[in-house]
Length: 127
Length: 371
Image (tube, rainbow over all chains, first blue to last red; front, side, top):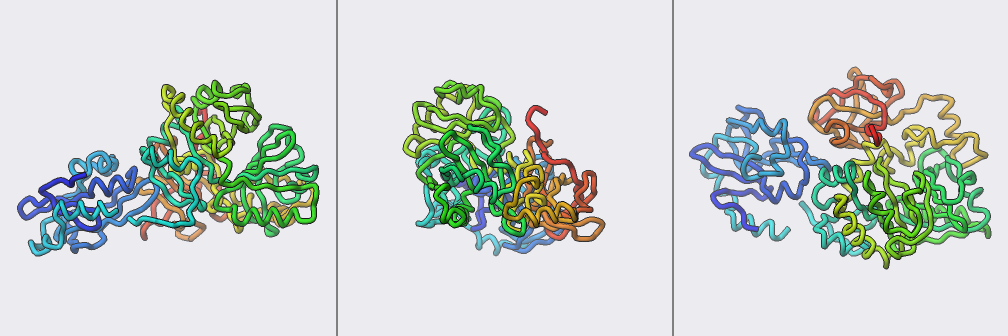
C-alpha cells in the first residue's frame, strides 16, 4: 500500500501536510487501521504551543488509549471540531476529513526530522 | 505497535480460518485468538441485529464422570450442581476459602457425564485445582479436552434460523440454558443454547477436526441472514452491555461473587462449600465494596483501573469500560465501589488523565434483549 505523496510522516504514524507556514496534522491510515474503531480524540487547545514529537493528546479506540505525538512544533491554530461528534471520521478518511489539527510551524528545520512517503512505507512494511 | 511472537502461544483448530478472514490475532489465555475481523463495532452490530460467529475453542473443556461428581462439585462452588436436570446448563463460581472467585464457569449436565467449561486464562490453575480436589476419589474422574475440542458460538436474533436447520435434533425447541447431544452439519456435538452476549444463540462443542468445516458451513449458510465472524473485542463489549462478569475484572480471587454482582448465584442454603462461611459473613455484614454500573455523562471513555470518586473522596475504581452501542452509544463502565456509592442514581466522578468526569450509577445490565 503506497502512502500518499505530498505529505511528511513521523515514526509515530502521524502525517503532516505543509501549506505555507501552517501544517495540517493527522494520523495515517495504517494507524487508524491498527487502532480500530476510534471513539474519542483528545486534541490540543487552539493557541497552545506544542513541541515537536511531544505527547499532545490521545486517540481512543474501543479497546485502547493511544498517545498522540505531534510531528512538528508550533502554535495550534485550529482543531477539527467535527471529530467531537464523529471521531470515526478518522477511521473513514484518515488523510482527509479526519485531519486532527493545524499548527503554525515552529520552523523548517523540524521538517527534516520527518519521513518521506517511501521511507514511511518501508517503516510500516516492517510492521 | 508491537508484534507479539511467542512460540508457546497455542492455536485453536480454527486458526487458519481466522487468518484467511483477515482477523487481527492477539494472545489471550495462552492462545493466539482473533480480537477482531472487520471491526469491533460492526461485529457488535451484527450480533445485536443478526448473528455473529465466535471461536471460543481456547476455553478449557473438561469432562467429569462418576457418581460423585454432583456432590463433589457442590462442595467447591456457590451454585447448585446436584439439582441440575439432564441436559441443563448452569452458571457457577468456584470460590476460595475467603469467598473470592477462583473461576466462573458453566456446567452442562449430560446423561452420562458433565461438561465443565472454564476460562482459558484460568485453565492453568483450575486443572490442577480440580485434580487435587478429586484425589483419592474413585467416583469423580476428570478429563481435559482443552485444545483438542473446539467451541463455536453463533449468537444473535437470527442464530436459531442458521443453526437449527443444520442439526439432527430440534435445536429451535431447546430452552435457554439447555443442551442436547446430536450432530450439527454431520459432526458429533453438544448443542447448547447458551452464550455470553445477551442475545439468543448457541454454543456448539465439537471435535477440533470437525470445527473448520462447521465454521465454514455456518458462515455460508448464515450469509443470507447476515452472519459475520466476531472476535473477542466485540464479545467483551457485548458481555459488558449484558451485565455479565469477566473473570479478572468483575470477579477475581479478591472479588467475591457477592461483590462481583453475582449474588443470585450464591446459594447459602447449600451444605458446606469452599468459601461459604466467608460469603455468609459478607452477606450478613453487607458492608463489602461491590460492582456498580456507571454511565459517564461525557464523551471521554473510562478504562479499567481509573479511580472513582464520590464528593471528592475516592470510593473505588473502574473494572471494565466501553462505549455501549446498545445503550445509546454512551460510555459505560463497571466499577468496584464502596457500598454507599453503589446505589442507583448516585453521582460519581471518574478520574481520567487527571481530570474528574461526571458519571452516575445505573442498574445492571445496560442491555436486555427485547427491550
